[in-house]
Amino acid sequence: MSRTEGSRHREEAMSAAQYYRRLHIPERVEEALNTGYRLNPPDLPGYLSNYFAELSNPPVISNIHGRRILSGAGSAALEVEVFCTVRNNDKKICSAVISVDSAPPLTCDTAEAEEKERAMSVETAIEWIRESIGPMLGGIQPNEQSNIDQLLSDFFQPKMEESRQQRESELHAETSSTRSVPSPPASPPAASKKKGSGKGKKAASAEKPIPPAEPPEPIVRGSLAVSAVSLAVATSSAILREVPLYSYISALRHEEPPSKMAIPTPLITLLSYGKCSPGKLNLMKEVMMIPRPGLTAQQAVDLALSLQAQITKQMDAVGKNAQSGTKSVSALGCLALAGDRIDQPLDLLREACEQLGLELGTDIYLAINCAAHELMDYNKGKYEIISGTWKSPEEMVDIYVDIISRHPAVMAFVDPLRMEDVAQWETLGKTVGSRCYLIADVASRTKPSLPCGDPIRTSGAILKYTNQTTITDLLTKVRLMEEEKRVTVLGCLDEECSGSSVADLSVAIGAQFIKLGGLLRGERTDKYNRLLAIEEELAQSGMLDSYSTFDFPVIWSESQNSEETKPST
Image (cartoon, rainbow, N blue to C red; front, side, top):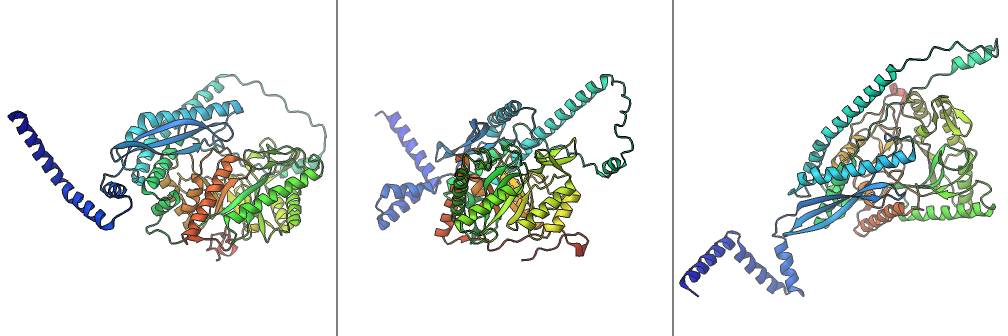
């Protein structure tokens, strides 16, 4: 070795020694070796690896990737993958999936047009993630949830404004085009066929015009990129911390980790007699089982499976389902049956309970998703509850009161009326609100990304994690609902994809109920399985709590001029 090379090596050695001393590496190596010697672990290299891993820099986001997947119904959905730099290595940490919300305001003339809109929304979300969101979040620690959610919201606001301006421009162009077409001459009034029909005139004048449907809240194409990325980042942080997702999000919600956590009561869908089901009955899109307080989620699922099997047995016994027409499995994961009268689903369940030795109203209760917005015939101004049978909003209230009086096991209605039927919601709340949950789903303006602003008073609302919602938005909305003393229900979309994070979210936010659909589709059972796994984890750790009673919030109080009062405990 030449003198020059020797000098260069000495300089490098001195520089290396200064570098390591500046980082306190010699002391840490000495401490690790001495501690390892004293502890004498069975895997010394593994111990040393863990020791130095704790001294490494925290993980940071290196890349976010979005791709199109299929939902359980074969529709377009979004999957987001998060990659982080962990100890100098880039690795995939996790993925999160989000379905496209197609229940209003995404409305299309045909199923083909709706599916095209879903696909375009997913492709737009992927483009946002690739070109803007991924680079924007690069180098940020995934545990900075609040900061990341704020960045996502700030990114989305101009997109929402751009979408609003585009809609207004299209509406203006459409209006201008309509005005340019000359109106046809007015037709003369038709002659009355029944002259002197005073009774008919009186009945017609007595009909109250219904409030027109409010314009649906527009869904910005690509907005699901925001919710998917927020959820994927939260999941990544939970994995890197080696804690369950529900525990990580609960820590964001509480200043101190709770000592007990409850599993929300599942609303398990058993039957569907909605608008898309065979047969004449439209009123009951979902008939759901509510287990009595005190049962575990596992016991509730077992009960639902027993009822499901018994119902199938009963229907097979009458010969090719002669009683209720054809049967199939709906996208909600339950039997879609045909019926022609309102009592039919409830009688079927009552008979199944009797065969199993269960008592309706004691062992199990029922909830009905009426999906009233799907039943309104705006030409007639009435709800078509059975094919050919229309009822006014006032008559709908009477129907629900009658159902509860004859079937006291029914303790919850979801969307019994449209959001616009404010007076009828008030009447229904005053009449049955003290013993029946009146829950808004589509009938609610309540979105996790929006402040409270429902024109109707309800027992609670179904929150759905989708579109531009972030984890921070969800936690904020839950806090506001708690302040209003409203029941929180976390639900799924009508068309779901695989992925079970909704179960973790429901436990983390302290939801009283969770609405996952039925037990006959894989994308639904994935979520039930996760809920049961969380229940087992909490039980093993001694943290499992439960809801011992059904508490009905006071919706209307006559004694205080229809002002809300504190619910009784």
